[in-house]
Length: 246
Image (tube, rainbow, N blue to C red):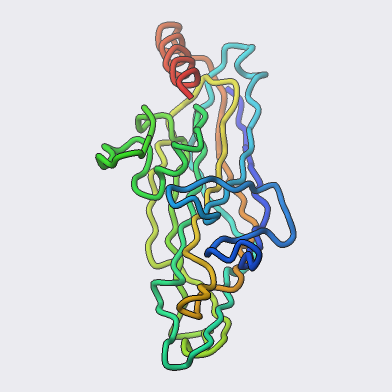
């Protein structure tokens, strides 16, 4: 038995209204390791940062990784800047809400799987929605999972909604779906998936002009050990099957 602390680092994400496309899309400023993920509307609203935690050394020794707990740390505040051209038509609070989902999985996720996170979390019975492909995940594959819904803090640290302004975002809903199930996979797939509302709208003359989302760290308190041969082989088999479905 050997104790380990596994850590994955996600970069900050700075987004601004894409005034070239001018369709509600965002662009990164400056560019980071995030990439755009196509959502059903076709607008650049979703971004993902992907990493891997390498466990190949443990897998080569036929060791299983067990997890005691996991937690997240953030490297700063989350805030948005909005633009309103007509004071009689203020920006609405729900026009500033965005999603942040963080997943550490023993099997990879496709872009279609990531887009499904807008509607349901992996491992749960999904909504029956046309064109949405949540994947064949079960609870055990999501070692760490969390979803934060962010909205402007209109009580403290925010300016009036009927003019150009700046505001801090706060968590209005927090969902945790970590299983902390052991894994015999040779790596852990790590995703930070962010979905924004439409940016500044040139028709309604209001919307988000920029958003700053700080860096994030996920820490897994783990240990490696051998398990009975049958359980180990069944765990490997299931991971291999799912990995080849993506």
